[in-house]
Length: 231
Image (cartoon, rainbow, N blue to C red; front, side):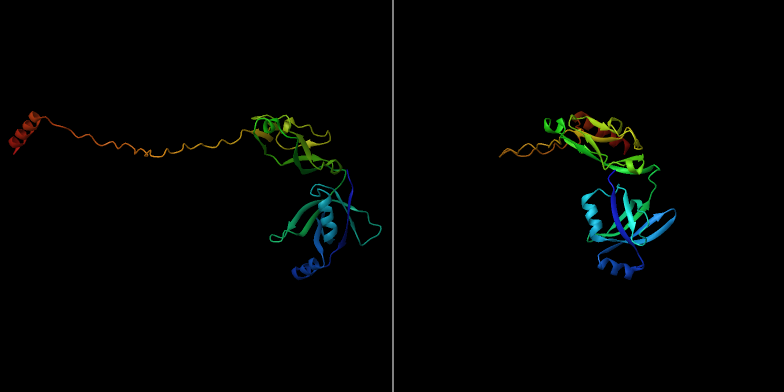
C-alpha cells in the first residue's frame, strides 16, 4: 500500500461567516470522526487538490498529521464524504473517518476495462459497462486502487460476471457473484424508410362501407302488402 500523508490543522473557525472567511484564505473546513467523536480541522486547499490530482483518494488510506502536537502520530483515515459547490464545482468540505489498520472494512472499489473486445473491433458491437464499482471487504492496507478486467476476448452477446473476475486472495467480494460487469451488445439497427417514387400517389386506406340490403321487386311488393294489412 502506498502511504499518503496530509498535514491538517485544528479548526476554531465555526459558523457560516467564519467558515466563509476560512475558504477565502484558501483552506477547506473538514471533520475527523473517531470512536463517536468529531474533531474540526482545516486543510490546505492546494495540498488537498494536489492529492486529488495525483491519487484516487476516495479509497486511499490517508495519514493525517495534526499540527498541534509534534509527538502525535499520524491518524490513518478514509474519506467519508467530499462536498462540492453545486455551481463552481470546487471542494467546500471533507469528512474523514479514522480507521484501524488491523480491522477489515467494507469499501467500494472502481472497476475498469482493459483491452478492446473482439465483438467491438471485428463484429461492430459496443461495450456495455454495467457495474462501475464492486463492494469488497479487506484490511485497509489491502484496498486496491481499482479492479482491472480484461475484456479483449468478449464477443457479441457475451458478458463478464463478478464470478468470472480473478480477485486478490486477501479480498472478500460482497457484490452478487451473478452481477454483470461488462457485456458486448449488437449494434443498433437503423430503420430504413423506403423512398417515395415521384408521381406515385400515396394509397388511401380502403374504407369499408356498410353493405345495404337490396330487395327484389317481389320482396318489396310483399312488404308493401304486409304494411297495408296491419294498417
